[in-house]
Length: 296
Image 1 (cartoon, rainbow, N blue to C red):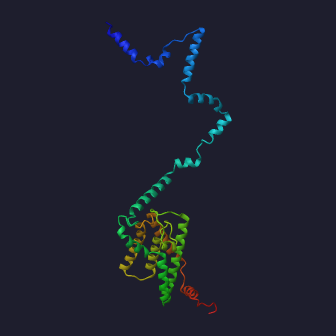
Image 2: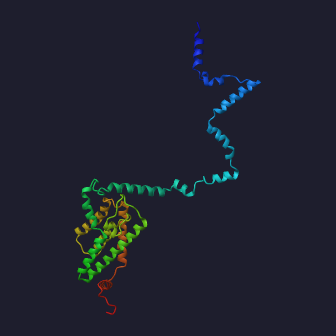
Image 3: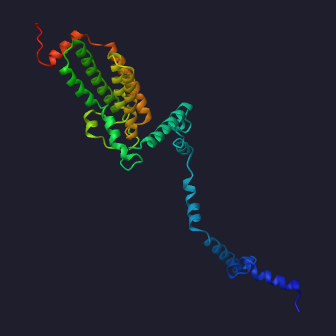
């Protein structure tokens, strides 16, 4: 009866990988001498060589031809160098990181505040009311209204104020349109400009034309009209609501609105500097009505 050690050794030999038929040739020792030994060694080496992968053989055959010369290696190392512009982008300055972070916050907040951008938005039912409020700050609305009031005004002081207001409105429309064409910043929501926006050349987002116009007009009226305190407060609230209405409609970012307010105050300061006198205004009115004569 075989011992337990013999049983375990036989089981180990049966479970061994080298005992399989395809690996039997690896257990046989190499035969030295004789044609058969040489043939066996050659056959073994051929079998081992044939077991190599074709990719390894291809790599070995192509390896001598891929060895570049010194000049070739230098030429290959040069394109691998990273350009200076890419290095600057990979290592941005603190100012660049801060600006990108502020822009990201601006876009995120502007999209969240665009609650009336579409009829399906959270405040879509109020979209028509907000659009009507924004229309009160439109450039075409104010220009037409100023011209109508100018034709009905009979006092020299009123005509002087209205002519300067009309020039301020034209300056505001042209300046905002020029800056928008230069910057070409899109709004937070992809929207097609309406007919009134195209007429007033209010196509892009930066700066907000309605905010600029509302700030300029409110400051102009507060400076040149005698109004009661409640009316002055309502005029300031109107300017703020007009600027916010465009953000709620998804037309502008928050930074567009803020820059629009700043640009409107700049337009007011500029018109105060180049304020036209009453005689100059009367001359312009005469030219526009074709009743002016250079001899009288």
